[in-house]
Length: 246
Image 1 (cartoon, rainbow, N blue to C red):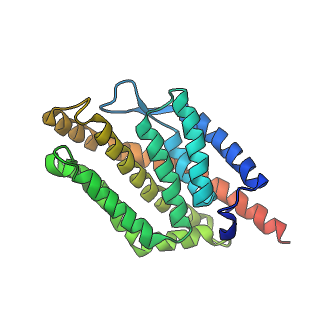
Image 2 (tube, rainbow, N blue to C red; image 1 turned 30 degrees about the vertical axis):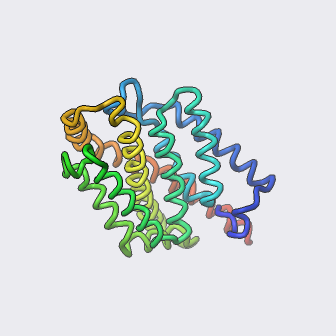
Image 3 (cartoon, helix red, strand yellow; image 1 turned 180 degrees about the horizontal axis):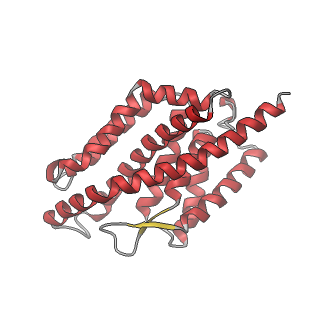
């Protein structure tokens, strides 16, 4: 479960062990391809997209970033995924952990700023070429700014929460964290690819149109699997925590 806040800045032996274990698991998830990455030949979205936000709600922001950064660096060195996926994984873990720690206002601000930077990227941003791409991103912003998100975090943190409410709370948090990560990966894709690899504006319009058809299904699959895994893990951790208090 989460460390107390005063422990965030101290890398104890226990924290090193936690980082090592979760980073190893994350690296394994990096090696499993889920979907081909449109616009990046030979690259794929990996199962790390499922694991990153789970790590975020289990560990503190500090430990989450260290864990995913380390595990992702190993995966990147082995060529399991791209720099886009690496950045997206770190972002997902950080964002989920921020939400868990009730930093909803800051999370909303970060989400909105990132969406604007991505959508309005000069010349090739989806706002200029294919605004429909942004519909699900906007839904994510509405959710993360709403009482739904704060209620979801209450469900996750409450040790007496029913399985149904826990599943709902984790599902909402997995959704917003996954959408935040998707924007980070997409922004990095824009920055790395324009104008060095993809300099034709019409090519970018085609990419946004193609991804608009596929990415909602990809994101929803990631959210569902992450929610199922995280719910089981959180229930186990809550049970162990409650047992230790007896």
